[in-house]
Length: 130
Image (cartoon, rainbow, N blue to C red; front, side, top):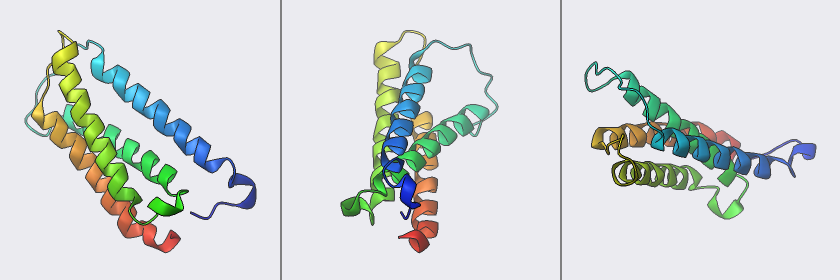
């Protein structure tokens, strides 16, 4: 990605800091106890929150990988894969490490949908910036 001259040094560490901060935030919110959420069907507010959280994570990862020449072409694939794996691990951790949370396959699917949509959009619209 072409950054203005003064930002070339700061952009990769900035995106890395955003990735770490966002992943930590998702980790905390995935493992803390929460009040029951009313179910409104399969596509509920909870699923939208999952998809949005992992979409943002995929975007931050993809932007961080943009500064790595070796990964520039396939960065959106790797960003989505990392976000999906992180989401799957969070679901396993919810089932194994907490007593108030349960692992849910539909949450993992929502995570994957959010990550995949951003990766597809990044790959489609990001070509003009490569």
